[in-house]
Image (cartoon, rainbow, N blue to C red; front, side, top):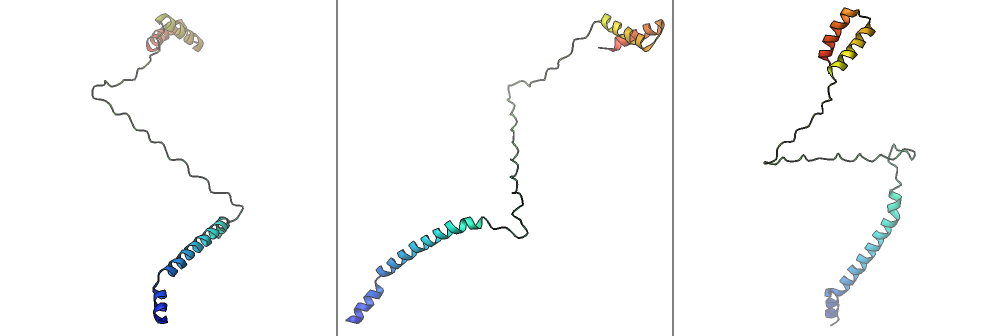
Length: 124
């Protein structure tokens, strides 16, 4: 009879489950301790050819912003940019400034008249 009892005890899965439970718990505990103590030590490893005096690697620049153009609508009229035109000075003011320039350039009376007519017609 003792042979049958030994055989049933060896086939009973309960002791094996108990051992697996204990092994899982101890494995989790060991891994947790290794992670806690070795995690900080791994951050202090200096690669070959490196130095503790090297500055840290700079962060990469941010990615460029992407702007999506506005889609034109079928019924909308296209927008045209408006151009501002400076108001034109009067003819008399232009002639006066041209006569002053001609006198400053040292032209005689006849040359000043010819210069002021052509200058006043070309200027804004």
